[in-house]
Image 1 (tube, protein in one colour):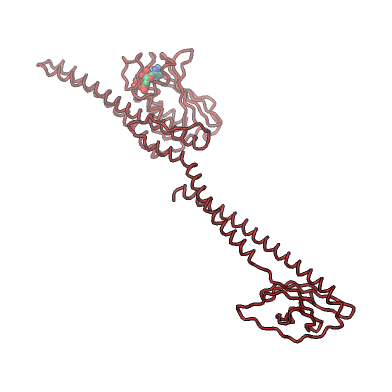
Image 2: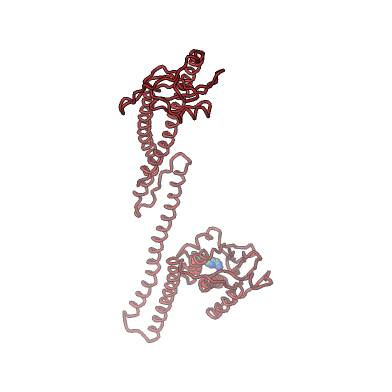
Length: 452
Ligand code: ADP
């Protein structure tokens, strides 16, 4: 069911409930008031009878019953006043043919002193009256015309349906008006195509929930657009980066095959091709790792890992992998128990990130040394600084170096792929580790990792 229909129905049900309760209340109060007025008039009749008829009580004689049983469709509807003595004999009546009051009803009046009751289709008021001689019951009855009440009921029922009809129409209209901006947003979002992600949803002037919803859509679109741009840039960068070494390999082989050469020349050409292929394979490996981190982050497992051991093992692995470089590690504020060193991590990935940072540090610094400075914090926000004595990183490059394939023009002579730092950042983001770059005044660069 559409929200508009649902809102209208809900509104209708609510209004119908309230309207029915109010109209029912009006009807009930009117009926009560009408009966009260009618019984007051019967009361006056009883009083009048007491004053005019009862003084003649000595002349009272039991009257013969001359009542005529009414047929179904000719029920009595004429007013009457009767007096009954304490033997339940009718001793006075205005209309002899009127239906008698039953002994049970009279008994009840004697017991209660005064009773209101329904006598056939008449309303009756019975009152016990004591005289100097004995006691009597005066019963005044009359026909309370229900037509007024019936008319009122019909008017109320008609008003109810008219009210409901108006509520339905206005509910439908206002629900439509309220939901119009939502439909507008839906239409605008539907018009956005992957080929043109720069379009945005109109947020309007109001600062209401719908404007916030439109803003949320726009933020989502910002992220989608950014992701698409990254993807496009990534694809074009990959093809560009692959093109260069492939062209180089091809031209080297072309030149080598142009004429007969000495075995030494062939060896040189093959060595050069091998170097290029190694570069290619290094890039391919990093791209594969990056793709793995990007494509299925939910499948990456995390386990409690002792941070100090991880650092020692990384340094050891680094030394084995790059014997020409020198890595050292320095711990401070070691906690008393091993528990304080535990972190949730995917060990191979975190090690890969650290290895990349250490490799950069050694590659870009003339002394080819890297120092891992670990500061263990009691609150778990441990810090690791990957420090070198290299040229440092200018402020203008501090953001750019994390873009895939970005390579500083200052270091184009050194071999590299430009993928390392974006891989590092992706891995650290998965671990919720914050990465920042500093270039201290003393020189060098520090890549600082802060654990969550
Ligand atoms: P690559 O090292 O393969 O070029 P990276 O993504 O690892 O790619 O690094 C991107 C750029 O960041 C490098 O080209 C380099 O200019 C700069 N960079 C990275 N680490 C350092 C460092 N420790 N000192 C100075 N510059 C660095």
